[in-house]
Image (cartoon, rainbow, N blue to C red; front, side, top):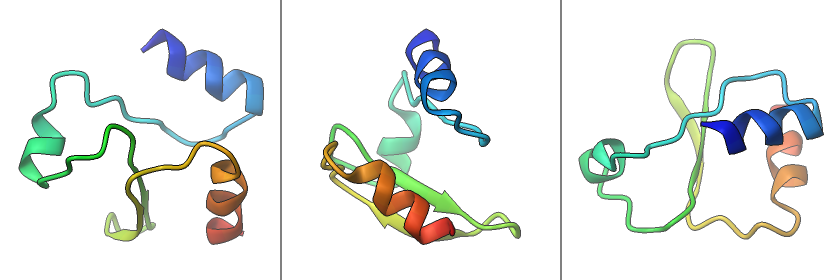
Length: 67
């Protein structure tokens, strides 16, 4: 998704961002929030979920969780 690539470039994000444009993942996990963030560990497991996402301060929360 173009907006994700621009966001990654603007903030220097070194990891993959997923856009669930067709809603399949949100349906599979019963996510009803418009924006959610899932932190996936090195073993491929979800280690933290933010749902719904509050945009202000969210990047700092994510960086704190991975730092």
